[in-house]
Length: 404
Image (cartoon, rainbow, N blue to C red):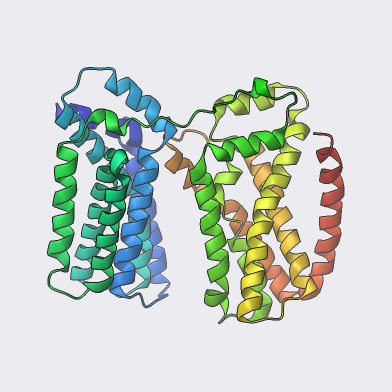
């Protein structure tokens, strides 16, 4: 029973012949070898290594369990008769293997390629990832007792921060994993059936239509997208610390390019096939939807850029008008590229939202912006040409926006 249920879940995630899993492992192997042969080394403290592995695995597991697309498959499964423990064991095992092999492995490939590590550290990191996955599933099944999950998480974080070189570190992680296993052993399969929040007001309650209203309502009921934006704002605050060692001409454009990596706001068509069909079917939607959508992404980008400039001013000072103009250009240009990519090359064939968020296409716009950052860094006077291009884009896009 367990084997059959596990096969049903895993084939939905990895493909009928597990072809997606094979492809991902091959990509991560190439990633590891590429970084390792580049001989780029970074010193990473063990506790930071364990913390990154744990938090990343927990976040990816929670995202997978909360996926609305996975809920449709889950609904079909729970309609069939099932044995509670076998169902929970199979489901958690499938989601855990999916999270570790397709998400955590990517982070491990990067960290192990650029840092010095021992066998014990690697074993401890894998145990931390497994514990984070089991803990996340256990806490997800105990939604009514969320405060217990917070307390449990705090204890594990204290263990990670204080016990990296202690003999009791691995036993304590194993104890936490066993506790999570016991919680899951008594969990109900229906606890993993995720139902997204429904809007209490229908669109009939409004006397007008508005694309901007759609954006507000969409993000109101998809709060994980907002959380990702908050993470980007936190990254904007910390970026000046990491970029301080670089030449000043390159710091600012590179920071703007990195902050364009806000995937969730750039996939509204790819993540909702029904909405995409409606937008493409109705006449005049290329302008009525894409123009406001472009400015919506621009607003999100410029918010992160402003935070970045404020943080830079507090830490180093010297923010100039040219930097502000560069911020506006990078925010607008990345928005335009994102819209063109989403309209002409939407992501297809994904299984759950986590696949969509981490699709390789997400790196296309940031890479292009990094190339532009290099051009701006080597030829500062080209910023005046970019200002002209920005003015043209604003005229072409802003005028139709007011009519939507």
